Length: 282
DNA sequence: ACCCAGGCATTGG
DNA sequence: CCAATGCATGGG
Image (cartoon, rainbow, N blue to C red):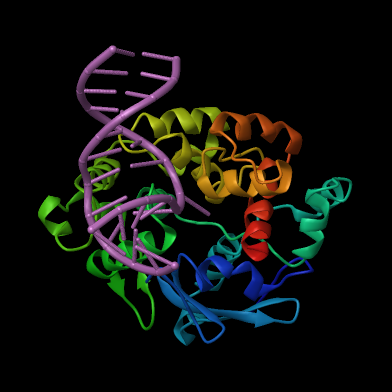
């Protein structure tokens, strides 16, 4: 089936994250297609005129899963983002404007599952994206379910019943094992976070061990697609803001947080385009 | 053999 | 309140 996306849409550009630095075994890029388990079915997503083509197991259509698959893929591809008002606003920004124009067709992808979004963040804390992806792939293949090409991401329920010894050889630090188990076993309703305002989401997440401001900000940005999310503590964003707005001078987290005011009310998309722009420039 | 990489908790002033 | 430290793997 075809999933239509607002034009312009550049599938390969938008999948840069999965093609280059941080793919894992739950989201596999191969031969121009993205393989992933959506709504319990492994799908293959590829570029098509007007959007993307989704190939799914033939019986999933008969079973009436088509709507759930289209919904899940749409969220994965960042359909909730409203790019048109952002482009209109950015066109009057002297620095960001040209970046957005140069990245025409870029639609930031989302992490559609809250537990997955948080575990991705935990694994990525402090270490390089490549190291995190290597560790996470071992985690996914150990606790997830193998489909054809991709694995389903381990569920919260599965992880709630895991223990320390199950993580042997995966490369997690002791503390990060505790963060994942603590998150899985906590009584926090992850699906209900979407009903809360940004600051309440941050408060609820940072109350858990191992989930700090950076993790909460990326959850707002890449899971909930909140327009005002601004991950000022992110090393990549700090370098991007430094390059585009401070002539390369290193910026503190506090400085970057303050500079977020420049991008109101489009901090999230601004951050994602700046990161992408810096990646292409470097 | 280093050193840094899309943080966070803990400890000590 | 701020500074220093340990954590784990991958790549340069």
